[in-house]
Amino acid sequence: MATTTAAARWSFPARLQLLTSRRFCFPASSAAPPSSVAGFSWADALRVAGDGGRGDESDLSGYFRKVKSCNRGMDKKGQFVKFSVEDQVVGYIHKGFIEHIRDFHDVFTIVMDDNGSNTVEHVSLQSSLRTPEDRTHAIGSVIKSLGELIPGIRNELYPVTSSYGMPVYFSLERAAAPYFGIKAYGVHMNGYVEKDGQKFLWIGKRSDVKQTYPGMLDHLVAGGLVCIFIL
Image (cartoon, rainbow, N blue to C red; front, side):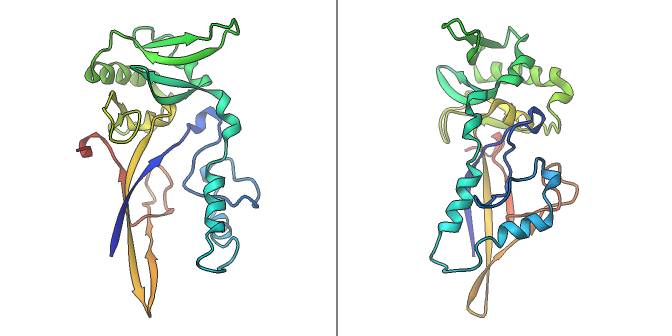
């Protein structure tokens, strides 16, 4: 038996030294999470998985604690500004990253706050970029110009929308998605095995040569929902 789910993935670039989004959920009562993915050991994974013990299977409080800890970082919200297209918010960009795209005047419009504080209010695209194709090409050129600032280029494009199923404003290199704070989606399949009347989750293991989370446990089948799979 298998089930499939579509899940939103939010992440922020570790190079900006922010709170990095991970697939691991830390209990609210646990110590602070490690500062990098490389610092997350199997001992950490076992500690997180075993938090709270088995308990009553109908008691989901432990699960909700983990969800809450995954949504941490709201105190960092002030470090981001809205990224909009056609007056629709499609992402959030860290103020530090704005400094790297500020000089691309033919692509981005940096709108300053009018209260005299000299702070960025939001970022949008130039009105001359009227079609999704024009925007995709223009931002693709920017990403290429930024070079190693955005590592791990995949040559796969994520559709940029205001929410799932809505019109696509342009397509963005997958590796750049965290830098523009867009909503990216994935399809996940979980497999279940029944043994002695009990159901067990069939766990997969990522390849040791994967760019992200190598060798870690994962869904049986999972992948980012890139443009070619959008129907």
